[in-house]
Picture: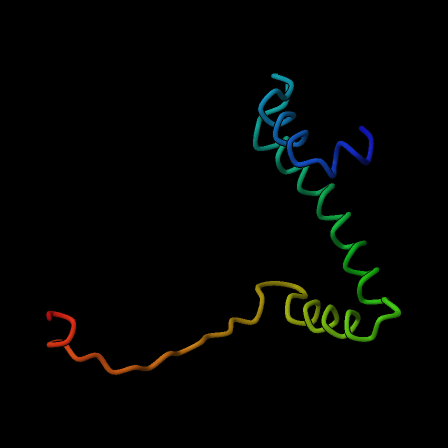
Length: 89
């Protein structure tokens, strides 16, 4: 398959829908994800080594947050006061 077929989302979707009957769907998806994952790693490496320091720094932080497992979970808490009477009016 050409590189264009891997980057075109509609082509990937079509191939999944019309895949060969000799390959189980989950195996096909796993194989496709491995290919896409390898490409994603190369793209991230290119971004980390970018000549633009802002791009490189942002992607270094992204990579560090995500290496070897689940990303660091960040939470946002919002506090506020609610006047029940004003909601009912």
